Image 1 (tube, each protein chain N blue to C red):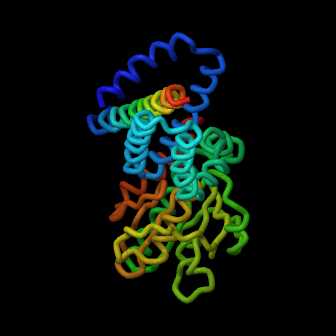
Image 2 (cartoon, rainbow over the protein chains, first blue to last red):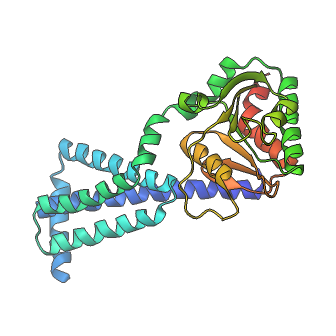
Image 3 (cartoon, chains in turn blue, brown):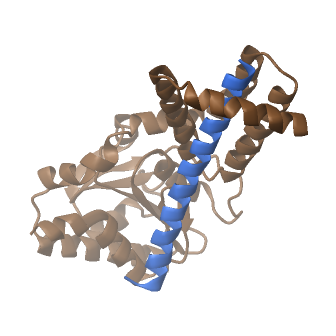
Length: 38
Length: 273
C-alpha cells in the first residue's frame, strides 16, 4: 500500500472515530442535562 | 460558574448510581440518533454544522442547568436544531433511505447479470477510451454514465433504449453533433449500452467553476443521486472529466480513465474469472 493510500485510510479511520466521539459526548451531555434539570 | 460545577458534581454520582435499564435504552437511542445525524453531516461535507451543533448542545445544556430550565424547554431547544438539520438535508436523507441496500448488493448484481469474459471486458474498456479520446480530440461534447447498479426507470425511459454491445463507433455516432440523441447521456450498464439521449438530474451545487456547463452539472447530479460514475467530455475544450460521488475530477487522461474503468466498473468481474 502506498503512503498516499495509507494516509487516506488513516484519515478515514480518524474521521470515523471523531464522529463516534462527537456522538458519544453529545449523548452524554444531553442525557445528563435532562437528568439534572428533570 | 462555581455553583454550576458544584451542581453537576453533586448530581453526577447520584445519576450514575441510579441508572436503570430504561436509562440504558434511552442512552442507546440518543447515541444512535446523534451518530446518524453526524454521519449524515459528515457524508454531505457539512462538518461545520456538526461542530456548530456540538457547540450549541454544550452551550444550551450549560445555560439550562445554570438557569434551572424545565426539561420540556430544553428538549425543545435540542429538537428544534435537529429538525432544522433534517429539513436542510431532506433530499440527502431520502436518497440514503432509498439507497440503503445498494453498496452490498452492487457487486452481486453484476456477477449475476454479466457473463462476459475478461477479454470482452478489456475490449469494452478500450472501446470506451477510444471513443472518449476521439470525441475529446474533435471537441464533441459527451456524457457517459457507467453503472453496475439499477438506474431509475424515469432516467432510462427519458432516452432511447438501445441494449447494444459497446463499441467506439456507436458511442461516437450517438454524440455526433446535430443527431437527435447527442444532447443526452449515454448509459452503459454492465457490458451493454443500455440507453442514449437520457435526461439526468442536474446538480444544485453553487461552487462549481464557471467553465463547467450543464453537461458537467448533469454528470455531478446523477453521481450525487446514485452510485455510478459519469464521464464527461467538454464541448468547448475537449477536456475529459470524471464525476464520482458528487465530486468531479478534470483533465482525465487515458491511464486515469483505464484505472477508473477497471477499478469501479470491471474489477470484480475480472477477479471472478
